[in-house]
Structures are given as C-alpha cells and as structure tokens.
Image (cartoon, rainbow, N blue to C red; front, top):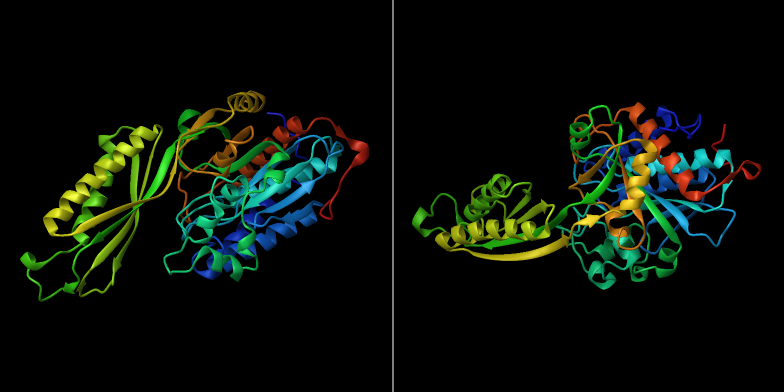
Length: 423
C-alpha cells in the first residue's frame, strides 16, 4: 500500500485525541450522548484540531461541523471525509472519534504537500448513535433531507426532554434545522473511516489492517410497550397478576432464538424500562427496545414479526396488551461498487459488509460513498473494551490520505497550505 501521509501522522497525536474525547465522556459519567454537554465539548475540541490544521471551520444549522481545505478549482465538487463524535452509553474510545481525528490528520498531511484542485472537507456529524432520541444518523439525515426536521425537533429522550430543547441547551437554534441542498450539491465523494465493529476483517484476512465496506445490512429499531396492572409484589397472588415483565422476558428470549431461527440475523433487546420501577412493585407497564439486523430487509421484518408474535401470545396469557412502534428502519445500503473496488485495488485490502449503521450509509443515496475500516483486535464495540492499536490507526491515516489524494487530483507543491500545527 502506498503511504503518503507524511511525518505528522504519528501514533501519539491520534491516540492523544481519541483519549482526550474519551476523558470528556468519562468525566460526565455516561460518555457523550447526542446534544449533551459532553458531545458539545467534543465538538469544541474537534474545532480546535481543524483550526490548528489551517482549515476554514464552520458549523451548519444542525450542529454538524466542517473544516475545509480550499482547492485551486472552486468549480470542482468537494471530497468529504469524517464521522461522528457522540457515543452510546458507556461506549468506547474509537467509535466515530477515530474517523474525525483521522480525517483532520489526513487532510493536514495533504496540506503540507501542497494544494489540490478539489476542496477537501473534514466533517464531524451530530447525533449518529440514535441511543438518546431513537433515530440514528440525525446530523447527516437532516443535512440530506432524509429526516423531516419538524419530526426530529419533536423527538424526546427517556427523561422527557425534546431534541429541540436539548439543542438550545448546547447553544444552537433548532428552528433552523433542516436540509441543506446547497451544501449537499458541493459534494462529489464522501469517504468515512471507522473502527471495525466486530471481527469480520480478521476472519477474511488475518493480516489485514484496513478493509473497505461493500454494504450496510438492513436494520431497524422497534419500541414495544407492554401494559398490565401495577400491584403489590408481596400480596398479589399469581392468578391475580397482569405482569408486563413476563411478556417482556419472552421478548428477550425470542430475540435470542432468532439468532438460530433466521440464519445471518441478529436481534437484541438492549434496553428495558419498567414503570414505576420499584423493587417491591409489579410493573404497570414495560417499554423495551428491539434492534434487528439482516442483509435482507424482508428477513429483518420477518424476524420482528416472529418476536412480536411470541410477545403477544405471552401478553394475552398474562392479561396484558402490547403496542409496537417502529422507531427507525434502514434498508440495505450498497456503497458505490466502482469506488469501492478502486479503493480496494489501490490499497490492496479486502472488501467486507457491515451490520453497523453509519453516516456514510445516509450519503450513499446522494453521492458516491465509500467506507474504510481499521481492524479491531478485540471485536468489541459500543463498550469501553473497544480498541485499535496505535500503529493500525497510523496505517488508517495513511490509507485515507492515499485515497483522498487520488480523489482530489494533482497537488501543487508551490501552493502549500500549512496550518499552525505544521512542524
């Protein structure tokens, strides 16, 4: 693989930056949920990285952040690269954060060599995880028009705070959220680098440090609300109970059975909230969130139907009712095959699918889009044990810089654009 990123793409700065962001979330106690003070502080730090790199930095109305390295030909479509800065509860160091840190690093490395014809833009997206407000990739969905801004503003977290109010708390006006067709029209290509979530890359090629994504499998999230009758845990006879926790337990077991009943599918109940939640109280209602994924959207729907059927049967036997609400559903996304093969061939790396959603999956419907993965030896993600070796992160920078240089065209060394971070 050709390596062009230069002397400043050392492991120290990349690791320092992802550690810096991780420390913010740890201090807050729950990492960096979207539109939290922790996520907002991460955006301030990322803005600083972009400014040190000499990029022109601007946010958009949805709070996404852009750092531009202007090209010599303003009429040419831009090349974008980046990821997100929010995390799920108790998430890891690298998910999203690595893609932003590496994007800035790679663009700064190119800037030291000279000025390209096409503009390069590093981007940090808001609200990718969806763990707070239920709908993932909100920053990219708002920008592209894939989500209705009015509906997004009305989303609420589990504490009852609206997304609009959360946006105001971190300092931007939610009324301006919405599609940005003019900005979208400037993009020629989008490339997102991300830590691999799982160990498919290792299974395909144990020696591979970097891989290219072929697709994102179909996936969605459903909220099941099971209503029964609240009562005393000690004085209520079994025959007199309408306990919604029983069908909720059936949902957990049905999700596990789906792993063997539908080949290639995964189903997870990651959150259960009983009401009122007292230790000595039979719950009056239980809400649970179901995440289901499969390469085929039809199979994904069939898995959900099978799980819900089990829950409804158990609820009927228990004297409870069930309401099912789909919070999000994303069909299978195929990344630009020509771009993916070009990148894979240039870097000499394998091509693999992913079952994790990404902002790149939103952009794939609008512009030629690709993803690079940096291997994850543990395979763990969305948890503190998530890990990428420092040397592998450097290889990721080198790979991304190589891809970006190919996309932006000739670089003029006489027009070097060097930021304050240049050595």
